[in-house]
Image 1 (cartoon, rainbow over the protein chains, first blue to last red):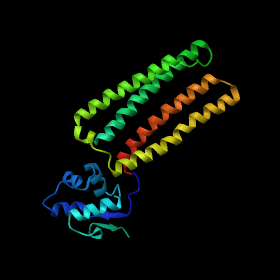
Image 2: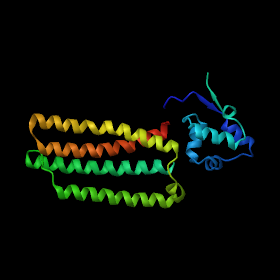
Image 3: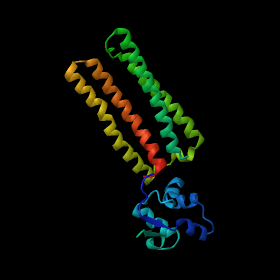
Image 4: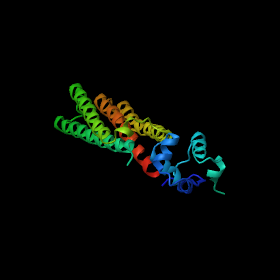
Length: 71
Length: 140
C-alpha cells in the first residue's frame, strides 16, 4: 500500500456529529465521488486545498479544525 | 467498486485478450513462414475495429448499471489517478518501441519493427488501465 500522507482528519467524527451525515451526502456537497471521501477518511488521499475548504465549510469549521498534520 | 475502476478493469481485460490474440496470430504465422510474418494491414484494421466495438459495448453495459456515476465528470482524485497512470504507462510503452528500433538497427527486420511498435501501443494502453486499477486500490 502507498505510504499514507501525514495529514489526519476528523471527517468521520464530524459526519457523525452532524446527524450521521452519509459519505454520499458529503461527497455531493463538495463535488467529489463517495470513493474519494472514503479515501480521504482512510488517509489514502490528501484532498486539494479547495476540497479541504469545502469540507470544512460543510461543518461550519475552519480547515485546521478538520485537518491536522501528523507530527 | 467505483465506476471508473470497473471500466479500467474491463478495458484492461479486453486489451490483454486482444494483445494475446494478436501475438498468438503473429507467432503462429511467423513459425509457419520460418521468419517474422509481415504485417497484414487488413488484420490490423479488423483487430482495431473489434477492440473498439467490444469496448463500446462493455462501456455501454457498465454505464447502464450505474448511469449517475457514468455521467459524472471525473473528480480531483480520479483526474490525478488518470494522469499518474498515463504518465507511468508512457514509460512502459517506450520499452518495446526501443527494442524494435534496436532490433531493426541490428537485423534490418522491418516486420519485427512493425510488430514491436504495434505491441508498444497495446502495452501502453494495457499499462495505463492496469496502473489505474492499482492506484484506485492502493491509493494515490
